[in-house]
Image 1: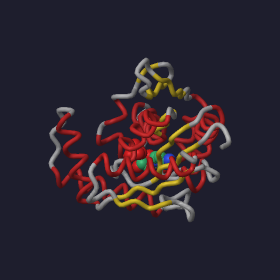
Image 2: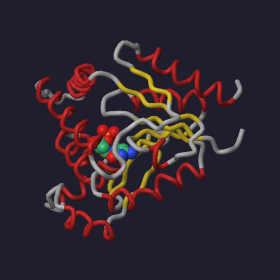
Image 3: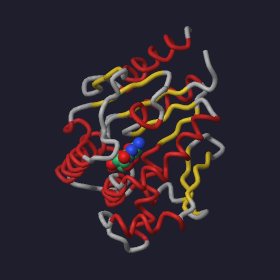
Image 4: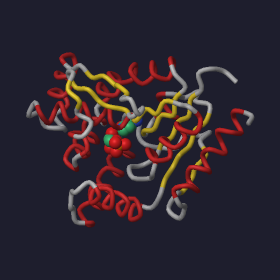
Length: 226
Ligand code: DC
């Protein structure tokens, strides 16, 4: 087995990618890279600068002045730093989700973040989740998974998660946001969300958390020859 190894998990928002990826990281000693958080950080920078998320020239003009870093705290949790400030919580609001989806459709933003993602995978064994990991960022990933679930089930999970964090949002609003992002992430011209030809598709709608983790862990074990 070559080293470092890479596991790519793509899929729409709320399919359970991050929960599955975190469990895999712990099980196989991989570094979990949440690439959505990186796009969210660019979105937050645009939001804070008062730039419209669809104003591509203005968003592109911000890029050279941004300093975005990925850090890991003592428990191994990924933190996002924007110009040295830890913005890991600030990037999780419903507004920043829409901002992230909008700025991620800009090809220059994607190109700007490519090196950061590839260099993580070149230096470490990673499980990386996103929308274009198996298709564009790591086309040679050792294991590729496309994890999905129905929009209603994904909205229900996201609604519960927001509620747990103390953000009461009507279910219909959460579903609308998910459908907006699905449409936008899969129809954009630059690296749209789609399963790589060699990805294994897993629908988590009717799977428990541990069943979804086990389905992906099995693929990793097969690859590692364990
Ligand atoms: O996974 P997430 O919901 O945190 O991602 C936020 C947005 O970032 C998502 O709507 C699309 C974009 N994204 C992307 O275009 N490519 C990735 N590899 C990861 C996220």
